[in-house]
Image (cartoon, rainbow, N blue to C red; front, top):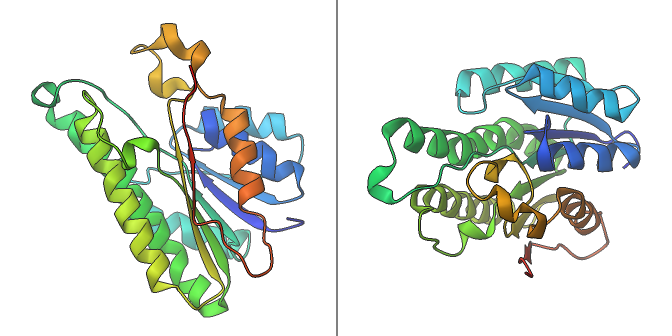
Length: 229
């Protein structure tokens, strides 16, 4: 990972911050993307070394294109994209308001599409690159009170697997990670009393890091991690 440029969405907190620390510790150049500048500053302080931060709303395509253009100009060629940013709002389907629906579809699904679109042309030009998608088990199984969240994550799975087919036969890799409930702010307020039983983001970051190391003649297409309570 020495000097590899790794771009991580949602890097200001939770799993994204843990992934940033893990790859930074392996010698990568970390580019953090998050809507919160304060959160990115906190993560950057913990890295104790040079990193790059760009405030970004990944649901805004024009912003995505602009920021990724700056990254290529100011940092260099992107070796890895980790799509980690996400939002979850949980309730019965009929209770979810328009803002909640738009937030989950726009950030979870459209955001992943826009950032992936931003890196694919250069990766294809260079015949190299790695796209790592944090999907969630809610992208492969239905859950009551998570209808729209599941819908957005099912969409991410379909999009990601289609992109993987489009780059077959190249040196571009795509891996999906599906995990159960994780002890991050995604669950704060809804199931906070159970978070002590949830997957720790540091463990998930370790799993993502170890399973996306470049190895000859193999690709780990997907990893599923379930809660054991």
